[in-house]
Each structure stands twice: as structure tokens, then as C-alpha cells.
Amino acid sequence: MREEQLIIPQSIYNKMLEHGKSCLPFEACGLLSGNNRIINSIWQLENKLKSDRRFFVEKETIENTIKEIKKLNEQVLVIYHSHPTTAPVPSVYDIVNHPDNKVKMMIISYKTKSPITKCYHIKSPSYEECLFCINPSL
Figure 1 (spheres, rainbow, N blue to C red):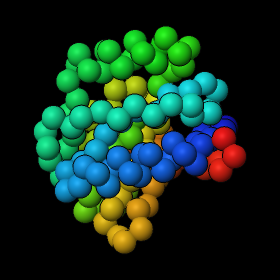
Figure 2 (figure 1 turned 180 degrees about the vertical axis):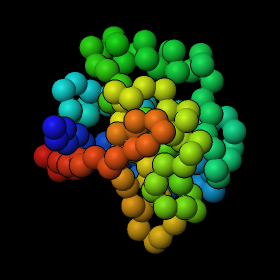
Figure 3 (figure 1 turned 120 degrees about the horizontal axis):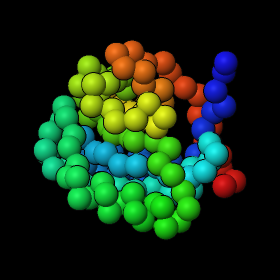
Figure 4 (figure 1 turned 135 degrees about the vertical axis):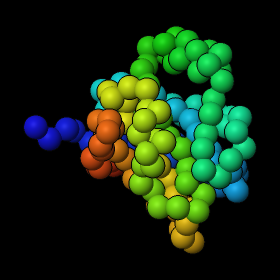
């Protein structure tokens, strides 16, 4: 069965790309929340590892962010992070540490001049690419 694609407003997509760029040379990370496949909010999180290969967010930060998301009657739809120098493909580390197979993974690669973004449904130990739509009018 084919899943419906995520819909991301252009403004949120741009903020996600800007967040990734602002964190270079390290990985950026965050959450996208919304309802039904439509993204409504972006939550930029701090990568405590300051690494170009890994990201880690403190448990308390995640818990507080999820509380804020619930106050908006939204749910986490995507966990995003950047790959500063590698392709936008999940690493073994990304797959093993992905917390929920109902939540998509989005990776922004800054390996090339223009960022490349891919979205995945993680089914550990594997993954499959998902479609997403950037909506300029949302």
C-alpha cells in the first residue's frame, strides 16, 4: 500500500534548510510536527555532540518539545537532521537510533552546492524513500 506524501510549507522547508546551514560544519537536528500528513511547525533542536557525523539531543529537551507540540494538538511527523559532507542517506547509526517507525526521517545533505533533501520511512534494519511535497502557498 502506497503511503500518502508529506506536505511541507515552503516557509518551514526554508527554515529547516537555514537551520542546517547555520549549524555547519556540524549536524543540525530537529522535529517537524503537524497533523494528517501536513507539517505545521518546526522545532530546531541543539546537537549536543557538535559532530559532523552524529547528533544527540538531551532527553529533557525532547520531552519539553513534545509537551509543546501536544499543546498545539499536533504530533511529531518527522525527525530531521543534516549530513554536512555526505549524501542524504540514512547511516546504520541513523537507522538503529531512530525511535519510532511511525515518524519519518528527513535528511538534508550539504555535500553539494545546493542542499539535497530526502525523506525516509525507517523500518529497522532497513528503510525506504518517501515522497514529500513543498507547498509554496501554505
